[in-house]
Length: 575
Image (cartoon, rainbow, N blue to C red; front, side, top):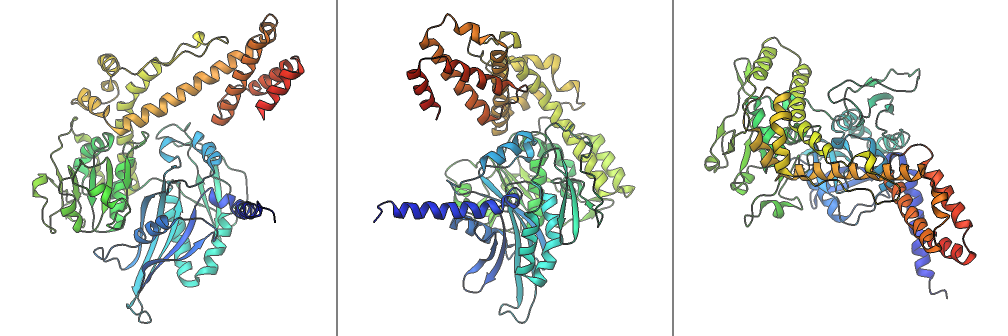
C-alpha cells in the first residue's frame, strides 16, 4: 500500500475544490457568497442556503452572518428592511491575493478590498403568516463581499430579493449564475451588469479620478435591450438624509472621524444605524478611515466582549447599535450619539443637542450627542444657511447631499494637502538614484518640521474655516488614521524609488561593467538583480515598457558566459 495514498487523496480533494472555485471566478470577484438566513424555533437564526455551495465559511463566520442578518426585537421592523453590517474574517482564510492586489492597485483607497473583514448587505422581510408557528414569516437575503459597494449591492437586492421570496432557491441559483457572467470590477471602466432581465450600468471609480469630479464614462458600444439602468454611484449614500438631524454638528463629526475617536451610534433601526455609521466613516473621504467600524453591532458579535470591557479605554471603533441595553454598556465611552425618529421643527428637521456624558444613564435616554468634545475648528455657518435655504425651496435630497459631500471633500483636502506637500519633500531627488548604489532612503517624517511649514503652506490657503488647525494636526498625529495614511504614502514612495532604480539600472551599460569584474562580483550582481526583479513582479511596480524584459535578457546573457559549474548553481537557485 502506498504510504502517501492519504495525502494524495487530500491533494485531489483540494484540486477538485480549487477547480470548483475557479468555475465561480467572476462571481467571487464581486461576492464571497450569497446567504439565506431564516428563523428556526429550536436553533434561532440559522443558515438555510449558501451559494456557491462549495464556499468555505468557518463556524465563527456563519454565526456572525446569522446574528447580524436579523434586526433585534427592539427595532420592531415589519415589512421589508435593508441594512449593512461588517464582520471580521477568520484567521488563516485563503484568498485570491493576486486578483485583489490588481484591483487595489488602481482603486481609490476608500474602495479597496479589505484583507481582514467582510461586508454583509441585508434584505430582511418580516410579515404576518398564520401558517408559521410564531405567526410571522422572517427571512433575510444576504450578499457577503469584500467590496464596500453599498449602493450597488442594495440596488441589486431590491431587484432580486422580492422575486426570491416568491420563487426561492431556483431563482437565487439563476441570479448567482448570472453574476458569474459579469466582467470583473476594473477601476476606470463602465460596466453593464445583467440581472433578472435588467441591465445595471455602473462605473468603477479609479484612483486617477479627480476628487469630486464627473469622470468620462468608458464603455464598449452595445445596443442593449432593455436599456440599462444607470447607477450614479457604487458606494455613496444620501448624506443629507443620514445627517438631517445632526447638521449643525457636522464639523464635530468630521473631526471625531478624522481623529479616529471611539463613537457609538444608537439608532431606532438597523437601517438608520448602518447608514449613519457608513456616512460618518465616508465623511473624511478621500482619506481612508483606518479604524474599525461596525455599521450594525449586536450583543452576539464575536467582538462584543473585546469592545465593551471596562478594564481599559474604549478602542478606536465606530459602532452602530439598536438595542437600548447598550446605553448602560457604553456609559464610559467618550462619544455616544443617540438618534430618535425624525421630527420637524418648522422647515428644518429637529436638531439633536450636545449633552454631558454624565446624563447618559437610563434606557429611555433622550436623543442627543453625549460628549465633552470641543471642536478645534469653528462651524461653517454659510453651509448651514445654504442647506436651510435648500430645504425651504424643496431642493432634492440628492442635490443637498452633493453640497454636503463637496463641503466635506474640500475640508478634508484642505487638511491633507499640506501633509501631502510635506511628504513629497521627503522624497530623494531623482538625480541621486544611481545604478551602482542602493537607492537613497526617504527622509523621516518630522512633526516639528511639518508644523513649521504651516505658516506659509497651511490649510488657510484653501479653507475659510478659522480655529486651532495646529492643535488638530497634533491630535491627528496620534490617531490610527495618520498611521494608516503615512504607511500607505511611504509604501508608494518606496515603490517609486524601486522603479526609478530599476529603470536607471536598465539604462546603464551593465555589459561593460562586468568586463573587469571577478566571477564573485558578477554572481553577486546577478543574484541582486534577480531579487529586485522578483520583488518588482510581486509588487507589480509601474515601470517603463521593456525594463523587466531587458534585464531578464541581460541576466540570461551574462549567466551563459560563466563557467558551467556556476551556471548550474545559478539555474538551481532560480528554480
